[in-house]
Amino acid sequence: MSFSAARSPSLVLLACSAAVALLTACAPLSPNTAQVGRTQVSLDSNPDMQWKYWGTDSEILNVLPEDLSKNKPLTAKLWQMRTTLGELVGVMSVRSNVDSLDNRNTVWTEDCPKQKGVLVERTQGLNVGRVDCLRIKRTANSMDWLAANDPAMAARLEAAGVFFARPVSYVSYQYTTSNGGYVEVQVLADHRLVRPQTRNSVDFLAAGRPLVDWSQELALSVRQSTGYLNGVMNVPPFPYDIDTKPYYETKTVDSDVLISKDTFKKDAPAPEAEAPVKP
Image 1 (cartoon, rainbow, N blue to C red):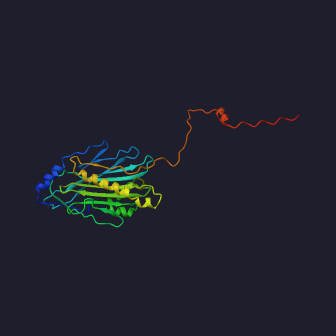
Image 2 (cartoon, rainbow, N blue to C red):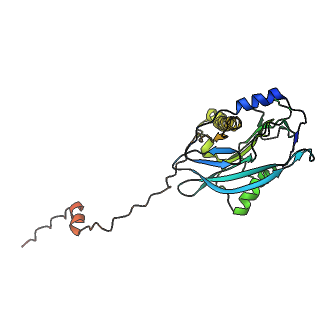
Image 3 (cartoon, rainbow, N blue to C red):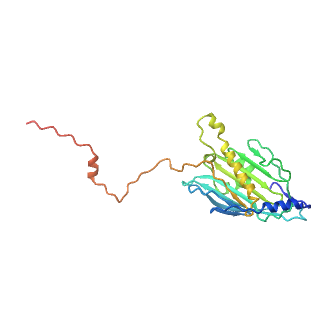
């Protein structure tokens, strides 16, 4: 990990009491739910394009000071989304803390710096001691960019020999809480899922708005999950569907239906009458 966490030796009783009060509500569970550490990921139930489980990763987050704190175990699950024709159109990774929220003060040391070519938002404003960072890259097909900014995702795709045939967008959101909560989400999504078709310059200038709206909705769901007792995080459906019909359609004749020659004669043009033979 590129950052660490630290436990504060001083506990603020009022803040702890407020945290306990916030963790009393439970969000409803959908049928398609996966457990990732403390977080329960509720996936979109689109019958045509569903998130399919791809694998699991785990790591240990170093927590300082070492003599007073235990390291924080994290677990991650990955999913793929493919069309009915088998085309890869999405990859998602969700990482969360395994331990429960122990209500001890945790100070997170990661910053959310600006980056060229990437939309960076602190969704809750400047919060010292907490990570709250949303990053949106409109087009992220370059493996060099992905390897530099998300090496774990790039390595996973390369090891599996998985590649996108069309342009994709990249969304990353990290969120932590002062009582030890940690949730991180990365998504690679086909442009057709997050960008409308453009027919003129006005459409082109507004084409990036649906991706930003969807990313902010995802970030809100992540933040809400840390306040639910059951840790439910609802993955919002993409704003657009992909036409999964093939480019051409092959028509076949049912072998059980026999077509007689009379059938063809019925539709055939009538033969011209022969000219009478002169005597």
